[in-house]
Amino acid sequence: MTSEEIYAADKFLEFVDNIKNKQNFSFIRYGDGEWALMLKKNPVYKKAGMKWGPSILQTGEWMLNHIKQNPGYIIGIQPLALRHWSDEILEIVKDYKNLANSDTFHKNSIKNNLNLLFDELKDRHVILVGPAYLRFNLFEYDHIVTPEGSAWDRIEILKTRINKSIKPDSVVLYSCSIAAKLMIRDLYLKHRENITQIDMGSVFDPYAGVDSRSYHSDIIKRLDIPTVKKVIHK
Image (cartoon, rainbow, N blue to C red; front, side, top):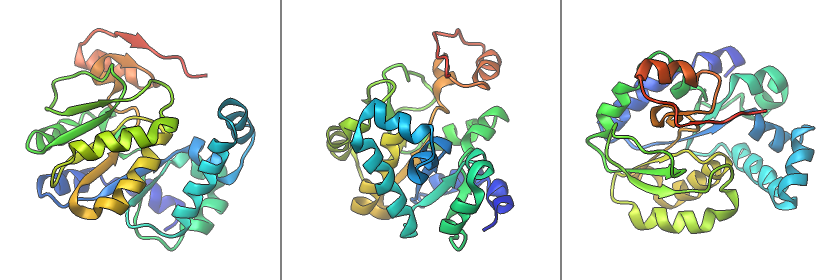
C-alpha cells in the first residue's frame, strides 16, 4: 500500500460490521510516538530512554520486530508518522494488506459517527482497559483500571486481569497508550480470532468529560457534558 492508500483506509464501518457479526479481529494503532521509538528518531527516542530507562528502548525494538513479521492483526498507521518517515515505514509495510489509517475512530468521533459503534457494543461482552476516569453509560463494560499516563510497566498484571475477564467473543477496548500495543499482540497470539481487540487511544476521553486532545473540546460541547478534566499535551 502507498501512503495515500493508507490515508484513505478508513475501516470504521468495516469494524462496526465485524463487531455486529462477531467476526473477531485485532487492531493496533502506531502513531508518531511509537514510530519514533521503533525507528530510533530523536528527540523522542532519547527522551523516552531518559524518562523510562533502557527497557522502553527495547520495547521499541520489540514492536518493530513484530511488525516486520507481518502479523495477523490490523496495523493502524498514523498519517503524521507517514508524513515524517514515509520512506522508512513503507519499506517495512509496503506489501502488507492488513493496514489502516490509525485515526479511523478519532475521525469518526469528530464526524459524530461513534453511536454506530456504541449500538453494536451493547450486544457484546465488553472489557475496557483504561484509566479510572473513563466512566460513561454508552454501553456496559467490565472496567480494568490502568494508571494514568503510563501503564507499559504493568503489562503482566493487566494481562492477567484481562484474561480472567475474557469470555468467548469478548470485545476488549484499550485506552492505555503504548501498553495497548504490547498487550494486544500478546493476547492476539493467545486468543487469535476468538476475541476482538481494539486500540482506541484517547477516543473515549471526551465522552467522559476529559479534554486531552485538540479536537476534544468540540466533542464535549456537542455532547453537552461538563469538562471534568483538561490535560495539556506539550
